[in-house]
Amino acid sequence: MPWPGCGSAAVCMTQAGSPYSFRVAIFVKEWRWLATSRDERVRGGEALAARPRLMHAYRRLPALDPQPPQHLMPTGWPREQTRRLFEYGYDGLGERAEEPVREILTAAGLDVPAGLGRHTVAQLSTVSWQAE
View 1 (cartoon, rainbow, N blue to C red):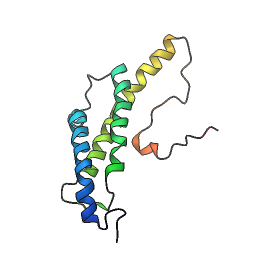
View 2: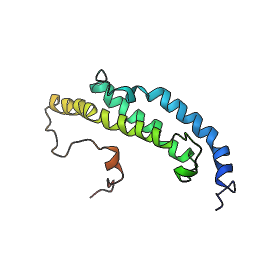
View 3: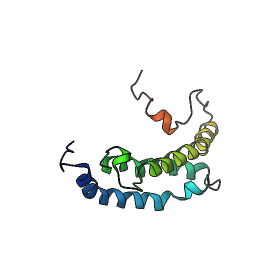
């Protein structure tokens, strides 16, 4: 089966693997601390700031991955491991990132909306961003 722009999966992996692997290495180096523990030292405003930075760092990676099925990829291709690191970190920072939002609203004398909450990675694909 031909692959757009390079003819075969093997050629695509060779051509696209280098930038993808480079970006993944940077991502893992910056965020690997999330995999060792749900670092309880990162709380409040730090968690609130870290969560969108993590999302921003991860969101470019799938576009660099040539996307053939995992079984066609070279041994050790980091797609799944990188996604698990992102999911673990994003979901783990969620509760701690929600705390300062509630504190800010309460300090301002505002009611915390009943629907205020955080999304997990699993929920992101089901969220409707359309105004109702």
